[in-house]
Length: 78
Ligand code: FES
Image (tube, rainbow, N blue to C red; front, side, top):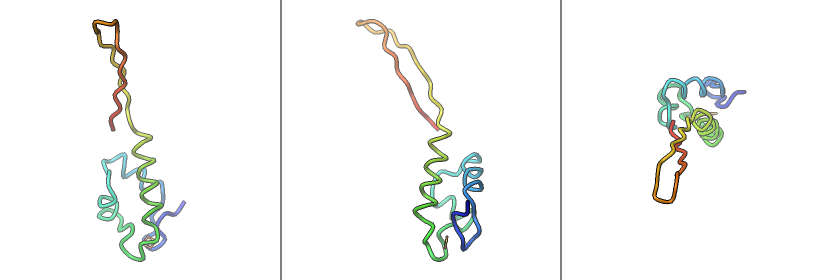
């Protein structure tokens, strides 16, 4: 799906950019020019960016001993 018609940028390109480290709209603007012309794509591009970042989050489960027993903690990072 095209996200930015002015620059011909697709959701797949944004997802690949996230795989390679893009994390902000500034990153997308620098790499593709997303939002730099008419700006109508900004909200959609931000949604695609955030969805791609969220989809790549890793979760680590940690079991921590505590006086009340064992505490289970999930830590998410991207
Ligand atoms: S649609 Fe992206 S700048 Fe116009």
